[in-house]
Amino acid sequence: MIERAVILSRGPVLEIDTPDLKPHEAPRRTTDAKVQPLPLKNVRDALQQAQRDEILLALREAGGRVGGLEGAAARLGLKRTTLIARMKKLGIESRPRSAA
Image (cartoon, rainbow, N blue to C red; front, side, top):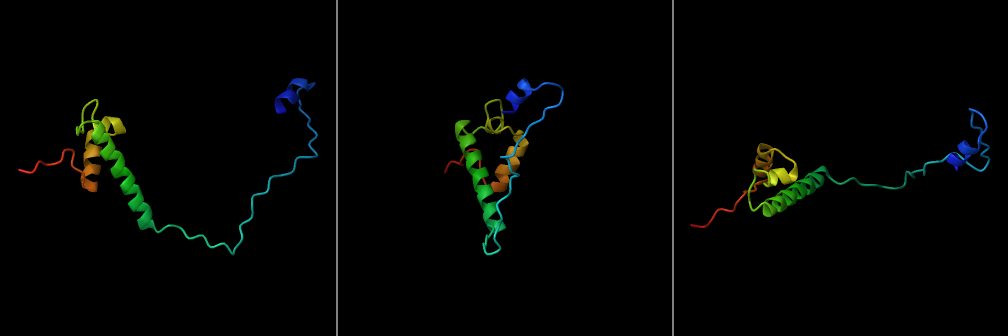
């Protein structure tokens, strides 16, 4: 609509008559609605679980390798040392220890 008005305009100023356009009003919130935010602990737990799942998937795809061009760190776009620190924080081992 605006493009057409610019094409059909005569002169440097675009004048548009818009009697049918009204300002947008944001929906009003009622004070009766009780929205309870998630406890911060639940959000942190969910974030840690998502990070854990993503790291485990990258490790599986990389055959347990953390570093290198095709290692888990490269797949996640992280430095090897950053990934190792996150794995330690989340209690993840790159290769499961064999039972001897």
